[in-house]
Image 1 (cartoon, helix red, strand yellow):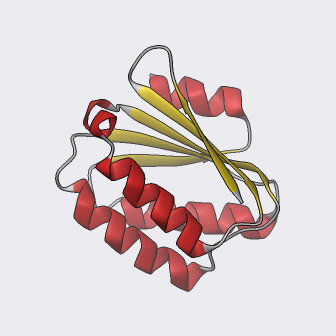
Image 2 (tube, rainbow, N blue to C red; image 1 turned 135 degrees about the horizontal axis):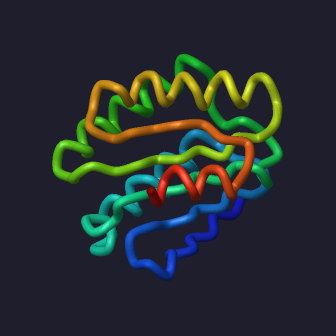
Length: 125
């Protein structure tokens, strides 16, 4: 598993690219590290790009627990657009949409895309 953080030139965004075989623990650890990063408070959008992942690291039960942790920490952050670029498989899209549904309970806006260009256009708007 590899996670590449690509901070956007506008200073307001981060494009995280996941590749390889992912586990729930890998993604959770990377998310918590990001939330502890001093640049996190200035983020307005986050693009979570799973197009090069070889698996879907979550099942529906995991998503609820994962978003519970994220929602707790989101209370300290201003609004954030989260664009998920899903792997193009039915299971991955369903899981990504479940994440977005659970995130409705906090002030992060979340949406699933299959195209990096569409994700960036929405997230940075």
